[in-house]
Image (cartoon, rainbow, N blue to C red; front, side, top):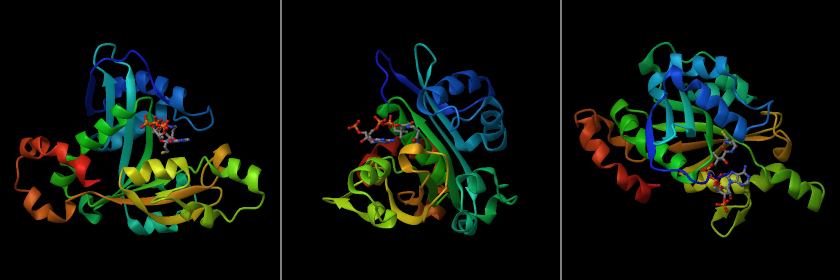
Length: 234
Ligand SMILES: CC(C)(COP(=O)(O)OP(=O)(O)OC[C@H]1O[C@@H](n2cnc3c(N)ncnc32)[C@H](O)[C@@H]1OP(=O)(O)O)[C@@H](O)C(=O)NCCC(=O)NCCS
């Protein structure tokens, strides 16, 4: 999905007064059943304001991309059968209990905006010591493949490659952004017609996060100046 006529992009942590613009963005990218409503968006921002990021058209203020995350225990991800189980579960109370995040949702109408979210968040992730991000990806090529080929082994489809990249367009999209480890393939994960309701739980390591003891001592502004190198690291 792409916008036209947008100007330069402003990226920042989300605020409650962004919710009307975020609802408009949700409505552009998700079906009525899939889109988060205002209450869900407010809840995410209130609970984890440092893990909710948005990109906006600098001139009009329209939201171009949003990313909502929360802390998660890897065991919760492994046990979850549905997106809802991770998205709604209470985050660990102790902020030090986990170094992992769950990407509740990524929504975008402009590829430069979605990439700018990753670049913006990376220095904050290094500073905080986050190591990896889990997310549940749709596999929108599945229904089309089943219609063409009949019965399809879904795990086989997920692992199928075209050259070095996954066959499914959305898995390919995430692969290019560093989400390369398939943790689980879940039937009935979320309502998504083209994916026949399957979801694929992916894990992406945050580049250079193993050096956290070092990054903790480095000023954020210095890490922000480094953020351009993430293009080369993913
Ligand atoms: C997935 C999403 C965030 C990507 O947004 P973006 O960074 O602005 O990038 P684009 O939408 O231009 O997609 C880039 C490429 O990824 C691939 N892709 C990503 N998602 C896809 C999908 N659902 N179906 C088909 N192709 C998809 C396409 O191949 C596209 O290639 P193109 O450049 O040839 O068009 C956006 O499409 C979106 O908000 N989709 C709906 C919500 C969603 O599925 N979110 C992710 C699950 S949490």
